[in-house]
Image 1 (tube, protein in one colour):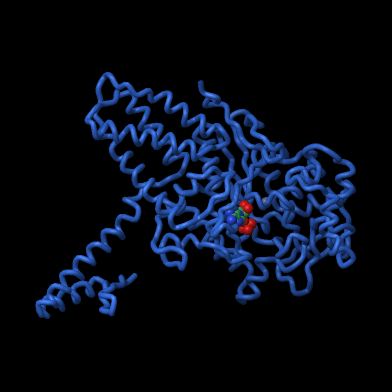
Image 2 (cartoon, protein in one colour):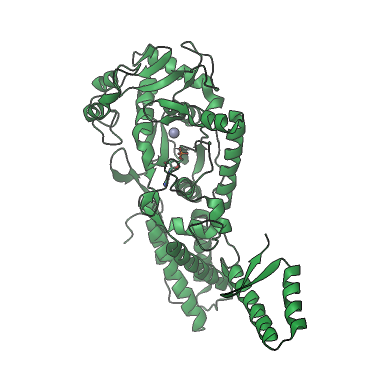
Length: 499
Ligand code: AMP
Ligand code: ZN
């Protein structure tokens, strides 16, 4: 018996700490907001994992027939170097270091982000708003929070009063700390060292508006100072503007639970008496050598280098579709560790899957096929309906691959109706839901080129052994003419291919 039907989707709500039935706020529609990148450097593979996870959800909701509005913002101002509202704006700092306009930095890395996500099969969101495009809305929310008495002005900056807020929202899913499970008294203990040096009444408070220092390049006029909005504010402003005060899903990586999403919830509660999203979903981290991929520690892998194979970590290139398949093989709430071996295994799996999909139109059909495709199909939905369990879905897909290969090899048959259901379901889950694109046998092309060049190297070696210089030179020259340079060394002959 199936646990869930095609219509009952369970999602893990971080706010509650358990899976619950997903019921849209408005019948037939889904409003989904995902925190986008801060565009001050190239997006790394860890960031991409989170965006691929939410893209998969966007795709699944769409597949189920919902009308989805997917909003994913671009943070182009206000994100400071550290979470204690101190340090330089990340984008302004990069602009200063490179002697560029901040908007040149924003343009460059937004383009990179779009390009990489496109290659990884992510669909374009319905709206992609920017923080700088919503300064007026953000100022409006700051004023409202001040008017309601939950914020104070200090030296031209405006801070949210966490203590007062929690006195009035003492328990339940609106309390500051409800999402991350942090206790605000402990928070105070941990951050007390900062007190005394700050304009804040308490180190727990967070900035809604910051007065710009004279060197700060990006600033706007406001009733309090010439300054810029706090990072957490943009997501409250843009999510409510485009999705309403109460909407369905808010997503981001686990690391955004605190302080970013905790602050968003508090702002939303004061501004609109709502937490904003009803379901808060968090994607887990991609690690490299067991440590979180992170821009600040430099423990990162650049997707462009992964696709081209030009990097110090890997010995070969991997197609974006293989990378996407690798990511989808893990559940979005599990940690996923990146390694060459894991990617090679994913490549083999990907090729096996594509070969099986190619065989579908060639399978023999007959009236009597014994395979119950409908039961298999429901299992695929059950997996996805259990909090988007893509690894279980992929396991079911591979049960189908085994069955397709068996039917093909034994020249047995499948009923016409089953083949139709099987083909539609596989294509829907692989291409539309998992977002795995079809490429000609991934990795195969470079393997073939390597084998072919080595055949020529062997032939040339044989010619040289026979002192047939004309032939050996001709082989070398003809390879050179197509951009393949041979190099003779102590270890034998190696080659390079011109880009
Ligand atoms: P940022 O540009 O730093 O604001 O990050 C953009 C998104 O990537 C956020 O949702 C982060 O939570 C997410 N993210 C950052 N590092 C990783 C990682 N190692 N694995 C998965 N997601 C990450
Ligand atoms: Zn955000």
